[in-house]
Every structure is written in C-alpha cells, then in structure tokens.
Image 1 (tube, rainbow, N blue to C red):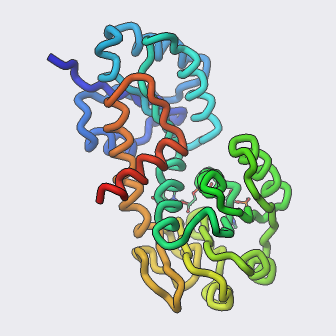
Image 2 (tube, rainbow, N blue to C red):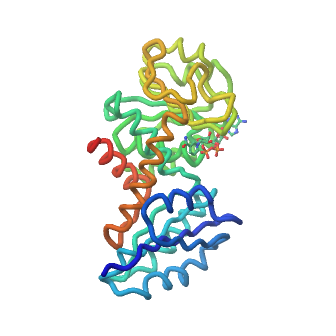
Length: 291
Ligand SMILES: NC(=O)c1ccc[n+]([C@@H]2O[C@H](COP(=O)([O-])OP(=O)(O)OC[C@H]3O[C@@H](n4cnc5c(N)ncnc54)[C@H](OP(=O)(O)O)[C@@H]3O)[C@@H](O)[C@H]2O)c1
C-alpha cells in the first residue's frame, strides 16, 4: 500500500503562508506539516527528518514546498535543502517564495499564446522585484530580448547581471523609467510589455500604451487599484484593446493557480525533482498543451 502524501512547508516568515497552505490542501496531498521562521542553518535537520524516515521506494510520497515573502531567502533555503541529498536519499522540492515562480510562469505563458518569444522584444516594468526578475529570466530563457525597467538604473543593471548569471547569452537592457517620457521611450519598438510593479502603482498610462504602435501584448500583474497599466482591466484575459491583447492580474491568476496545483501534484511523481522557475514554467507549458 502506498504511503500517504506528506508536504512539508518551509517558510521564512513569522507565519507560514496561509495561501500556500490552502493551495497545498487543494492539491491532493494527505498531510501538510508547516514550519515558519525557518532559517537556512535549520534546513539540514528538517530535511534529514524528511529523507531518513521512509525508504527510497517511498520517498516520492514526501515533498517540500519552500515559500515566504523573501525570494532570496527562499533560494537560500532551497540550496540548503538540495545540499542534503545523496544517491537515492532525496525528496522533491518546489520553490515558490512570494508566488514569484508561478506568477511569472503564468504571465510568460500568457504572452507566448500570442507572440513568438524567440522573435520578441519585451519590456518588463519593475523588472527588479521578485515577480519581475523571474519574468525577465523566463523571457530571456525563451530567447526574447528583454528591456528591464526600474526607477533606478543601478537596480535594473543589478537584475540584468543576476539573470545573465542564470541564462547564458541573455540579451538584456537595463533602463530607468521615472516618468511618462522615459516609459514611452522604453516601450518604443517592443511587442510585449509586462508590468510587475508593486500593488497600487500605475507604471504605464493608457495614453502611453496607445501611442506604441509596435505593441501586441500587455500584461499587468498588479491587482490593486490603481492598476499597473491604464486601460487594462484586472479581469482581462486575452481581451483586445485597440489591437493590443491585454491581461490583468486576475486574468493571469487563474493560470497561476493551475500551475501551482499541478506543480505540487508533480512533486509526488518522483523523488529528487527540484522545481524552480524553469521547471514550473515547463509544467505550465504541459498544462497548456494538454488543454
Ligand atoms: N496575479 C497574481 O497571481 C500575483 C501573484 C503574486 C504577485 N502579484 C503581483 O505582482 C506584482 C509584482 O509582485 P512583487 O512581489 O514582485 O512586487 P514588489 O516587490 O512589491 O514590487 C515590485 C517592484 O515595484 C517597484 N516599485 C515599488 N514601489 C514603487 C513605487 N512607489 N513606484 C514605482 N515603482 C515601485 C520596485 O521596483 P524599483 O524599485 O526597481 O523601481 C519593486 O521592485 C505585484 O503587484 C503583486 O501584487 C500578482
């Protein structure tokens, strides 16, 4: 008889994410064990508890989900977890701190429904944040040229450096966009824009959007008014506004939720899977292909 499916939630925050807990329960697991305020040096003992309790033939029924608001901390927890594994003694691990991987994957998948990413030039507004950085990484991995915008050219350049370390040959341009004129110049000649700014901040006005003749797809991830892109509704899902296909945060959110649940289910298909941005994006691609 197969062992019950146990998901272990490791979260760096004071309270382990309730959102992640609900999604876990909705993803056909049997038990959820939650750990909060997890520090990197505590991961080894926690992972040992997971990997030394069941034999290798049953370890695919134990998996780890790493969440928390801080993506850099989540990456550190992931690294500490994977360092513990050897031979067949490993469990599958998924990283989705701040929802960054599932959200960026859903946004890039939405774009890929309408344009060939390998032939595209994209602008990612607020490309420095957790979600924006992941979106830049996935776009670059798909062969898209990416302009990475921030209020600070230094922060934009730092993000480009980080992504280049991850994606060999990435074609990235850091830009500062602090006013409508700079944003219009950054948008000029692109066919895709993703706005990944903080909640309640408009980064791109309806006028600037309408003035860009090369644009085909506009995706806004901010669900809190004022929204990130003027004229794009939060529920838009492939809605045509003056020949630009638009998605709002809720329009992208449905795909994000499907990817999140499918990724958790996938954790229990084998031991030793490591699901980070690219693997989670691939799960989204498989879902799209099957639908
Ligand atoms: N649809 C979904 O399912 C889903 C899931 C998760 C997140 N989200 C949304 O996705 C968006 C991105 O998430 P995140 O966690 O990466 O966001 P974040 O860390 O809160 O902010 C992203 C970036 O926004 C810029 N920013 C912050 N305050 C600003 C201001 N006052 N004016 C202009 N720019 C400002 C900053 O870039 P610079 O300092 O470099 O300019 C920051 O790095 C958010 O709106 C979030 O709510 C959606």
